[in-house]
Image 1 (cartoon, rainbow, N blue to C red):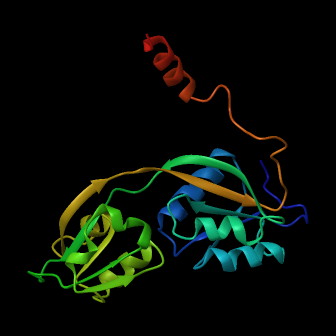
Image 2 (cartoon, rainbow, N blue to C red):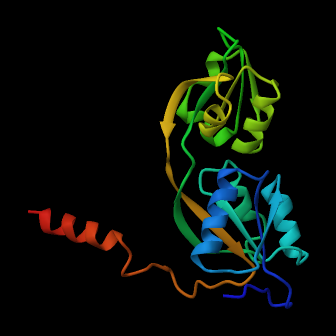
Length: 208
């Protein structure tokens, strides 16, 4: 599908950057799934700022992970102008807590707020909140903190530089797609033939 916005220009989709983030990965998966040839991914640092970009017509869609700490604020900010138009389940990269190899007892850690539940940030004297997992990786590589919760590939691609203190692997999460045209015409939009139907049927048959 040749992806173009109503104004005739290439479709632009905003998501959290920088390049290499889980947002980047799953936005690219979404573009590929819908065959949106020519679609451009626009990296942003703040979702509320991205909403303003959408209001000005600078981007057409926006994709945000359901676990992001600004989801409620994002939905509420311009709820009469910008709507959730789609959602999908997509895996993160394999994630974990990495520590610079030369640091025996790490005192500082970088991470994004939605990942705080996967490890114990309180064990570190200094906690640095980053904007995305790829931002954590970039700053960990630069030596800004001793440890970072980010993609495990950072350790694999830089052998000897980091040890993996905790490996949580891939996580299935929901991604929200925002747009300026409301498509929900009733109380519920759902896919009756979704893969969950087989699970529901098995649960129904197992009920006494």
